[in-house]
Length: 260
Image: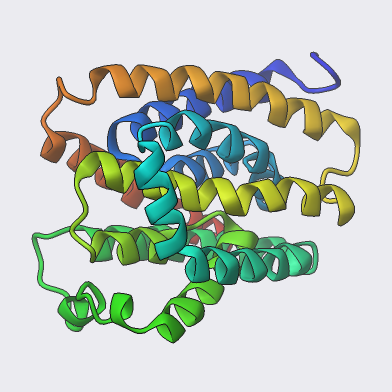
């Protein structure tokens, strides 16, 4: 037992968070999703969502630094409506988190995960994907607000940021800028989430807070490792491996939620 938490819980979480951080260091996304669904194997889904709040905040700090000061200012102005709307949606999602039944949240995590894989893969054509990944949303600030709020609502309740990734992916940004901008958005949202989680008493006992802080430190090591090997690994190999892993986890969560 460490800080009231069994080593049977600590070790799997450390492995999951490190791997999630490494994947994020390489691809720029996947940290919250992989960390949450992986942690849900040893924690209650609500606890898994709350556990990743501090790690997501901390992990995006080094990734934001990939943007220059000029890029930071430009991207900050460009995506400000999206960030503000997503932040509001996130707080609302967190507020309803404790009222969502465990089985329903487990099922939702599984469905969102599988949906993310289906949307991200490029082997099978997806009807309507061309429209969603067009620049239509970039040209309409009101669309930024709508997508931002909806994305934040889902992210606040489940740590799944599929629509945020899809939105940025539609803009055909350079990989380094994509990673930095996505980190900027998650950093802005997560800074509010840390305070909101405390106000809403989502951490409950102190054990979950310290577990979250510890996970954040492990995740930072994972992110740094991923950044170092980003240019050494074929991007398609990394993306393919992550998608296969997520589809397996997503299906398992769905099956578990229905009691099979």
